[in-house]
Amino acid sequence: MIERFLDALNRADAETAVSCLHEDVVHDRGGGAREIGRRAFREFLVRRRAETGEEIGDIVVMANDDGTRAAAEFSRRGRSRSATGMVDAGPYYSISGGIFFEIEDGSILRITPAEAFAHR
Image 1 (spheres, rainbow, N blue to C red):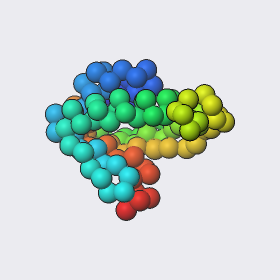
Image 2: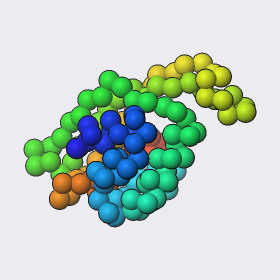
Image 3: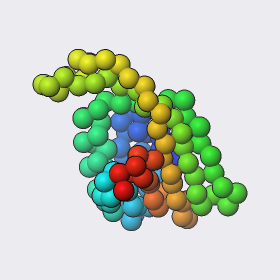
């Protein structure tokens, strides 16, 4: 399920990504912000893709024995944007990233990007 979710993010397939989520998914964001629900996450995905155009690669998924917790480590790849918003205007970048997941009843209940911890 985590791989399906991440693959959908790469393909900008918000509907498939959201189908992996619990109805009341909790999405922790940087700076202590938290959004709840599939609708809020779908809106986040649309904004994020438009803002960054990033893709992820080199994905490694890890999970605990009972499948209630998982983590994914990956590389975030893209190009910096110009002041006018052009995606391919800046230099290419590839940086490490990660996400922690809580899973309940076969769906993702919580998503916490590793960088969310850095801002708390």
